[in-house]
Amino acid sequence: MIKCIIALTVILSASSAFAQSRRSLQDIDKELKQTKSTATAMALIESIAETIPQTDEDVAILGQLMDKYPTQGQKALTKIKDPKLAGAVMKECDRQAVKLKTARSKGESNLTVKDRQDYLNGYMNSAAAIDTLSKLNNKDAIPLLRGYLHDEDLSRFASIALGRLGDTESLDSILGNMGHGKPVDLSGYGDKGLVRVVEELDKPGTDPKRKEALVAQIKGSASPERKRLLKDLALNHKDPRVRDRAGLSLLNSIMVNPEPGDNAFISEWVGRTKNDETGYWAVTSIRVAHGNGAKPLDKSTIALLVDVMRTSSHFSTRSAAAESLGMFKVHEALPYLEECITKDKESIVRGDCMQAYFEISAKVPALFHPADIGDIEKSLNDPEVAKTMSGLRKNDPGRLFHEAMGKAYEEYRRSHK
Image (cartoon, rainbow, N blue to C red; front, side, top):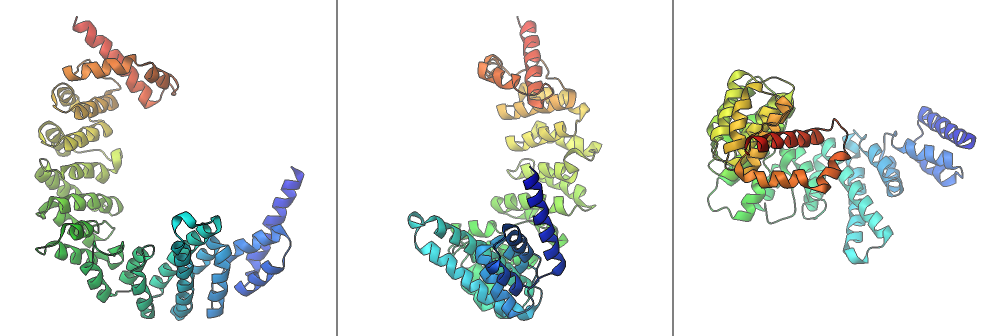
């Protein structure tokens, strides 16, 4: 134990000393090759991440260090801020990409443990270098990055970087080949990228594979303009797949950038889509906009959820409404949840209504749909279920719900003799 403490003290002391002296990458590389002390080597390796490459030579040395110490090297790479170093980063990026391709060319079944490590390091190091190039804002990197659009591993990173560099020519090419080329991500192009995606979607004659790939590029962000675009798509686009994807993406935008007008929009969205297959996202957005139970619902929103639960033609939307009522513990909704438990035509919705009732009242009503009795009896009498429940903490929600179900079922049986 004493030896461990001494060793740890040595490592921490060495690490502190290296951090204070801020050794250059050249010094670190030289000392790593010479040192025989494990503690000193460990401190040197960790100090790589704290360096800031200043010259082309620094970048070249860092590249060699990244081969052996990728995580520390990648951290140092991200600290590069000088656009003049873009050329050196490009050389290193291409060297790492060659390593990746070499390992990949051997075929999955022929890779040794070392080959797999080279592949992973090449992949992660190339991704870090591409990300660095995207932030240096040096247009000279564009031709190199365009070449990576044809690489199955690097195309997504390259497309993001090209977007950040404002390469509209590549955007045209990417959109033209969407769905028939390597995987891409247009998030680097920001809101302009989404506008172009929608324009392409609305062109007649778009083949299904390309259309599917375009729809997948509809994503959320904190941008107010992105929220405006997504709201319009979720409400008004003629293609249900676009409305569905926009609805999902809008949840993310509402979560990361809540705005005063969100609640009014959501009410309209729910009202217009409650009988549409995309209504699930609209109802779910109520939870997101109210902090998943953190903020209380107003009376009009409660009424809207009850209406959706009772009248929506889509079971997933009715379930989402029931789950929301339970999450926000809306006591006045209990009679409507009882109605759902006994009358909804879908068993999954009836189950969600029962769960919501329990979340609100800590009880399950002694009311069941005739079609559910057999499954309830089977669950309550199953030895494996009983064993699982007995293994849970006494205050575990799953155990408490199971116990409440048992009490309700016993009461139901007594009243139906």
